[in-house]
Length: 104
Image (cartoon, rainbow, N blue to C red):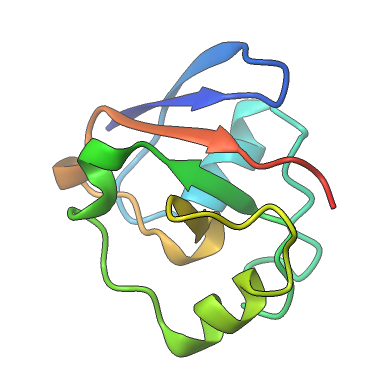
């Protein structure tokens, strides 16, 4: 599947990724180094915060209470916020667009 990632400076990067990996893993593998992912995807930090473009919001699994609690610690949280480690890429998400949230 393919998705588009917008960096903090607004550069659009098209990323090809196999199904079954997290958005966080795919971003890190792409060479874009704006996602720290300090916990490695263990849902214990919010350093993989991204904004999901609205057309894809309803295609994602619901946000867990733990993810919501971590996002509450971010001063940059908005209605499009998700943790990229919690989004597993599938062909249903082909064409996804995400933007890296500002660094805390």
